[in-house]
Image 1 (cartoon, rainbow, N blue to C red):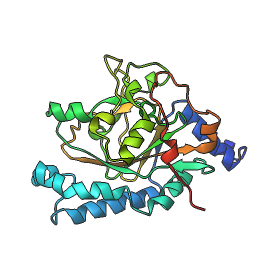
Image 2 (image 1 turned 135 degrees about the vertical axis):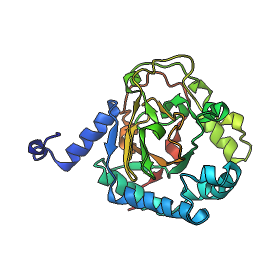
Image 3 (image 1 turned 90 degrees about the vertical axis):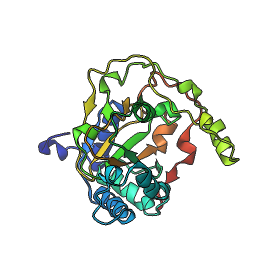
Image 4 (image 1 turned 180 degrees about the vertical axis):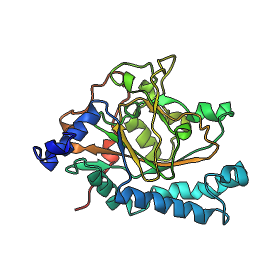
Length: 279
């Protein structure tokens, strides 16, 4: 399916299905910027430039403004990114442009992630730099994760993958997650941070095959929610900005397609809160 000579032997739907099945099998796709992913990245860059003093590069603002002022500038914007109405058309467009199926698509809206260049800050690193599978947080085994680079992101600021452990159990605390219970507490306004555990790998595991993928602005990293991955200390000297969102094909979820569950003990499912493609 990779060569130009083979493309004619398969329909578009078969090629899309093949890509999805490879993701279920543990492949990580690096998709070069599409028209819509490039548009989304530019919109966030423009927004960030408008939030900060003129001639301040957002990637350097952590140092030039100071952490407190930088955080204050971003606080409200981080919340507003997720509610931007354009995502309802942009995300299906990105999925289609990346060559993955749209039928029965469910999706959430993106979070803007900000990873500070503070590799020497152990407290910060302990809070954000940990390996996990998204399935440990009650995400469906058939879920696909999408990571979108807002700016060029070098190896030193990239997240890490551990693909050799895709089919191997890793000790973790996913049993602490009960999504239905947490959702109820959120609805009545009584959820505390204690009810929002962030499952992570515990104890030692083999990090020798860690994989990082440098990206250009607008590029996408696409991978299974069962893929072990995590933020690593950002040693690039500049703040990293990225968007991430998740998709699931409802038909695949209903048929229990996706990778084998090797170590997830979370309860419930986030699928009930995902959005449908608007027709």
